[in-house]
Image (tube, rainbow, N blue to C red; front, side):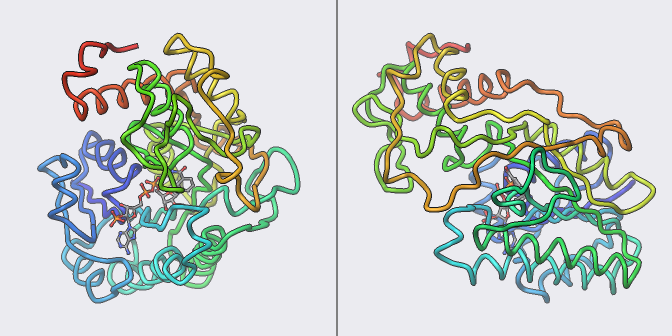
Length: 345
Ligand code: NDP
């Protein structure tokens, strides 16, 4: 039986990837910083071996790798809040940059034949110099998160070149799901649409300004003209696995090839619950970013041609799934007052 080691298993992608690998017959191991509390938040499949370890602590990672000696390693662990990274560059670099190097280095000693996937990010392109972005587009980072991802990406290239290790990077464009964190844009919009569907004028959840995500019946967003290439996490974890099955370790852009503004996402989401987004969404100057990446759009031709992978879930389906999950969550949290309104879209 093949074995996989997943750093960042408690995150969105970690969850989908572990399900995907189990379905393919892998023995799945994952490190998490707080195993017991993680088990409480997420019902993990009992077949997964969850190990208490912090990627920044090399002795803990070393012990985990020595016990397992995996065939494949997926490094998904990260401080992943892009904009919040500006306030804590040390913490971001410790996990995203140094953590990755710790993993590459230990793997080189302990399991040199393991194939490694490194989660790089389209944030590395920052304000892109051209449209769409592919593996050759220059990096132009705008925040510590992007800088730290470039560091790990470059380290992967160096380790590949100098030590012959199989380390492949997926340059992941934005992707969300029912499991993405609440601060992500589509998750916020899905929450707003769910509130509108349930007739809630005040959301029980807070945004980064510590205000209700929905207040006075309005969803508060930043720049609605920001345009991103948005995909579905479930599709993207299949791309990660596919990249590790290729003959050679290479870098691949992982994206849909389409770019949507947040305004368009709002339109789709509110339409799904029978509302007009203009009545329910407002752009709040307090949520505007000082530096905005502008428009991102992937050119996924390399992965399509070489590995026959493409994103298959349409944006409308992603949004609908996320709204349904938000409705279910709100109905459970708020109980009888809204439960009678619950029904899948
Ligand atoms: P999440 O934020 O959902 O998951 C990140 C995971 O990393 C969490 O499980 C977190 O665990 C874990 N982690 C953080 N620090 C450490 C540490 N020191 N030791 C061990 N684990 C740690 O991210 P996603 O699943 O969305 O993303 C997966 C990867 O893909 C990340 O590297 C992200 O940067 C990258 N990516 C994601 C994109 C997206 O749109 N989702 C786009 C581009 C790249 P804990 O609960 O302990 O914090």
